[in-house]
Amino acid sequence: MIDYAIEVRNLAKRYRKVRALDGVSFDIAAGSVCGFLGPNGAGKSTTMKILMDLIRPSGGHAFVHGHEVGRAGLVARTRIGYLPQDPVFPAHLTVRGLVMYTARLYPGHPTGRALRRRVDEMLDNVGLAAKARRRMTGLSGGERQRVGIAQALIAEPDLVILDEPSAGLDPAGRRDVLNLIAAISGDTTVFYSTHILDDVERVSDSVVMINHGKVVAQGPLASILEASGQEYVVGLRGDTTALRARLTAEPWVSGLVARDHGSAEEWRIQVDDSPAAADGLVPALASGEGYAVLEFHLSDRRLEDAYLDLIGAQSVE
Amino acid sequence: MSSEATALGTAATGTWGVLRGETQRWLGRRGLFHLVLWLAVLELALYHAVTTKNQPFGGLGYESLMNMLVISSALIGIVLTAAEICSSYHSGTTGWVLGKPVPRSGYVVASVGGLWLGVAATTIFVPALVAYWWLPKVEPYRSVTPEALPLGRFLIALVLISLIMAFFMGLSALLAVLFRRRSAAVILAAWAFLVLRVPFPYGDWMDYTPARLIRTNINQGGWSELTEYIYEVPFDTMSAVTGTLGLTVAFLVAATLVFRRLEL
Image (tube, rainbow over the protein chains, first blue to last red):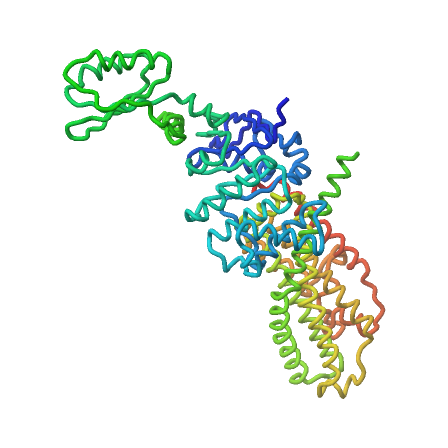
């Protein structure tokens, strides 16, 4: 039996006439690192805020480690570390003071020297040991985000919810955040939202995609990539009119994008029935006349392609 | 039962953490800055009042001190509470704290409570005790009251001023969570202060508010009940004290009920 850290069932949220969430359902297995993807306004932050009991859903249920949010949100939050989007921390606190303040909000927190040692270790992990005595107002955006990660992890939670943890970070800062996520994965469930799909591919094992308040895809990253279809890259020279007409008529071709490179063309052929494409594409290319095939290979399909297929299609609708 | 106990323990830990943080904030470096600034303003104003007025009786120095403390503590309490609640709400700091195991009711009570403890110490007790020490030493005040007032009664009067401050902070907190606009909360709470302060005829129900403690009584030479008390005049305003305490609690309860429904 799978142990779920998060279970969401038909979650809905309305703001007057706007449906921010419209029947969102997904599960996140304990110990996984799940990227939460979607365009701006898709409902990612709303979902996360409902999980943190900061806003009330208009319908549906959400459970964190079996505790229903809303009814037992307080107890559920003892096992969650949370970093909101664009967090504003109390300006009067130092870096160490803020992480210590956060630690003291959790039941069973260490005290005295043990607490100071724990806080110093955490600041060392996020690379802020040298700036422990600096006030929050004197930190750069990337440093503030690292403090945000530190305060989310200080209570050694079972679940970490991070709303765009790499937003505003430079490449080095992004790398550090990803390394931190990778370091805690396994023992800790990480549920984080982001727009940086490369990051998701690097550290996530599962993905939930949301658009217009509805889940458009969810599951293991490999399944998402596979389910979104395959793409072949074909390089051609010559008269390809007949070939294009023939291929676009094939039922297993879901899309064909051609790019003109002077005397040659590059075609990207999306297929949604891989076996049929494997059987049919090569004979189709070989049977034509008046053109030469310069290049032919299966594209190294990435999450960005899957995302654009799934979210892009929805956005057009 | 066990989950209830866990929830209670969690709530207590979170609330205590916020209370501790808020109190430390106002008693730390920031509090020291406020204290020095406030000491300078209050003591200089008091010195000016004491040394330039033609005083027919010796209590005017303490009367001035009590008046200054009542007015300043109420208004400072109103402004700081409204600013604290509204700015934390709009900046997202409230949402960040409540993302931790902190109950909403505990957050409101601990925020206002921590603010009250810290600000009462720095704007009421320390300046008042400093004034208590130097007032009898200053001419012409020294010639009319060569001895200091009983310290016990003076301290109790300061506790009552702190209660008055808590009353207006509770009112400001309720207005702040209702309107989420600092200006609206400050204007309405300050208006309530003026209504309770200005001496015009009022109904018996006002005896259960801070009005009886803070308004000046023309028949008593412009003294308030609070000032009379420190001169060992028998105290007959317990209804005002209990009423103020009850209303403070009621404001905070109402504020937590409204706050629990807020979306962050």
